[in-house]
Image 1 (tube, rainbow, N blue to C red):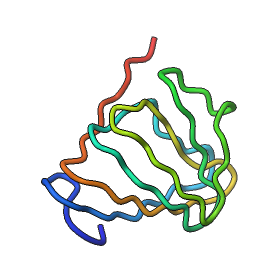
Image 2: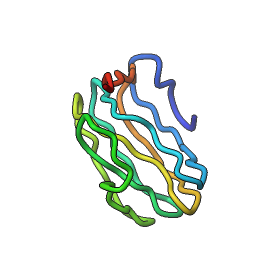
Image 3: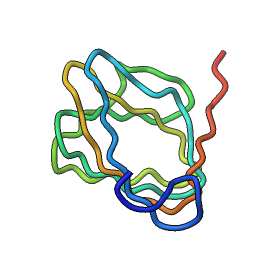
Image 4: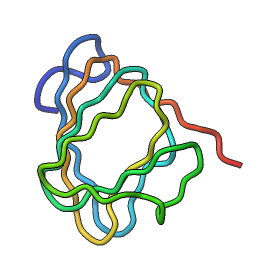
Length: 100
């Protein structure tokens, strides 16, 4: 956490590290928009309720991504570590999509 607290109302800025080795979140959404900048490595993102690591798109350092509130997405790292800077307004809850 760099600024604020994602669990409370107001601005927050966090830095997340994704470890290499096909580490991914599962499809989920957040109530508010989140603004992400890739700082290091390749960050892979996918959209929709069905998880498919092979359908993700690579985001290289310097890429700016907006995850819109209530938009279903998943993300992570494949063969290299990735670091991202996330800015948003809290509270930043996460709602998982039920998988079959």
